[in-house]
Image 1: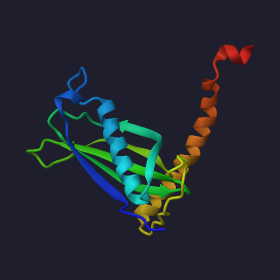
Image 2 (image 1 turned 180 degrees about the vertical axis):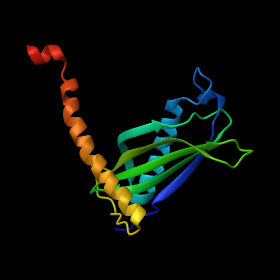
Image 3 (image 1 turned 90 degrees about the vertical axis):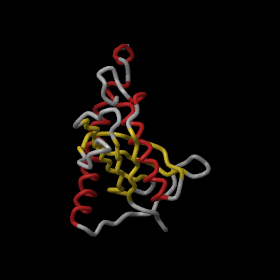
Image 4 (image 1 turned 60 degrees about the vertical axis):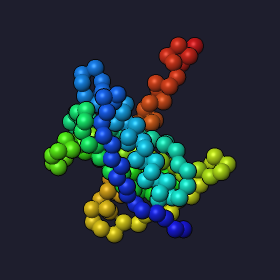
Length: 165
């Protein structure tokens, strides 16, 4: 199965409409940019329409200021049968100063879907570089941890009153 590029970088200029009450770019704007980059990466790799199945481990490391040049780098770090795990880094800088600061990083899982809206297979990514093998193994460990967290979260899905009646 043929695949496209494994990574993509999107660039945005942080606008005044992206600002929160504290004067910094709000997390919702950053998450939107992350979702756009994850979609572009997954669709480019799979050559199919993709939907977001999971976004997690989001760390807001540093604030983004209005007027900053924002760069969102997305890269495939693991492929399942129908899913693609994508590592994302968000960096920002003043357009007049090339020194970038890491502001946010996370993992997003995208699922390829066919015309019928059901999950469909994606090309496999088989890393060969040690750093890429490490990223894939890390993605697998995180996947197992998410399953444990999901099992724990089930207790929060059913309201307490229903549980006791």
